[in-house]
Length: 99
Image 1 (tube, rainbow, N blue to C red):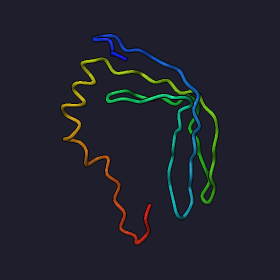
Image 2: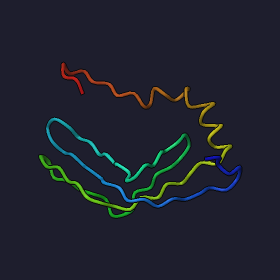
Image 3: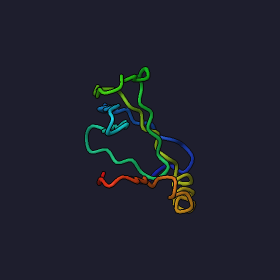
């Protein structure tokens, strides 16, 4: 799909939000329903109140999410500058366990 040059396109989808707060893991994951691809520069907003999970528990729920598609110019900018920010996306672990 060719992105518009100047206008953002919004797409609403349902998603599953899973939050884990245990000794082994502190994580939040979002899985979008359907065959949805999030591209460079796209933004995903999950609707609803914040999820608070007590220590030692895991919580999963369904929510609505809005995908704001990047314009052609935003996609080009992210592709040009994205390699400069890749270190922010790396996950480091100093334990002997594989993630």
